[in-house]
Length: 194
Image (cartoon, rainbow, N blue to C red; front, side, top):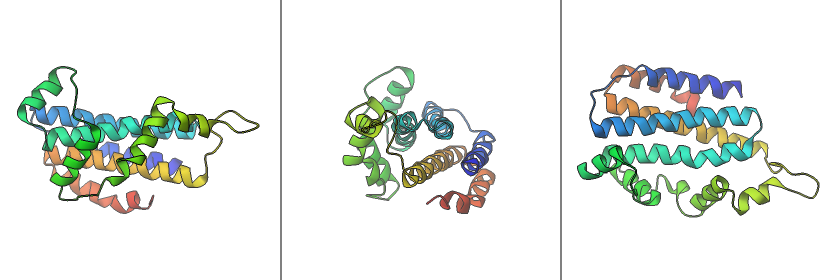
């Protein structure tokens, strides 16, 4: 677990050093990407305390923050940017945002793991639906009883990936080549979680 905290701290140090020229689009996106990174740190703390149900519940919010930030930066119209950065309003469906971000990046199907059945699983874990119930009990024990080493590794990978990608988005907004080089220098560390 220490390794994940070290990796997240390295990513955070890179992200916290960047500056950018303000616009509603950039600031809105930067805020959401930073929120996604903050959620990754919170998930790591929850995992360290073996509070896996809460860690999984926060994962959807982490993923939403990332995709909303990228969507706001690349796909939202100017009117949508104004609307979503000045008041709470109904955003497009998350699945649609994910598809549009993937298309913008020229990577169709690259984020399929967040769509369909998997999104339903994330919803269930976030909102205390049947998956949380099934994963929390067995014949003898109440608690998040069905967590395996493979589940823990998977959650580690996802947390590090979203943190890295969120910071990459912030570096893109800032157009900071020094920060990009620093991120590239830890890419092998990030991919070692896969």
